[in-house]
Length: 179
Image (cartoon, rainbow, N blue to C red; front, side, top):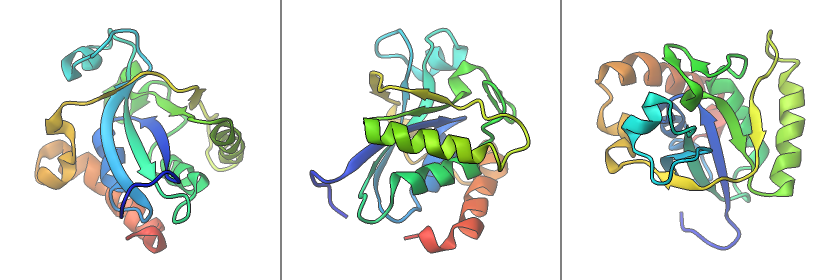
């Protein structure tokens, strides 16, 4: 797939970026997935600084996608399937504001779609949806060793016990959306 002017960008935070990245890399219509940080105050944060929770950044994935092949709504439906949008600043054992559930919309159209999907998710989840909806923020690409992490380290403990089950759930639930 190639990049063109009709492609769109989505920025999503739902816990550790390795989990989201691994799933979206398998989804049809996704042209590029990049792990990074956004939503904080400190310029050029490092992974260690973000993990310490002092920069205000969230771990996010930045997705470039072809809306002719996959809709923003589809991306959000998958997002709400592969993380828990009812836990404040937590995904499993990952705790802190850097692991918050957040959607950084990139346009008024994305904001409207996100609001609608969040409202619909209130009927799916048992607890209230705490996912934040934020305008675009300065985005920083994470260090190179975080990119494509799951594919490079599938046997690493976190990948085997946390990331792999999310990928398996995606494959089972959304088989038709695979490449």
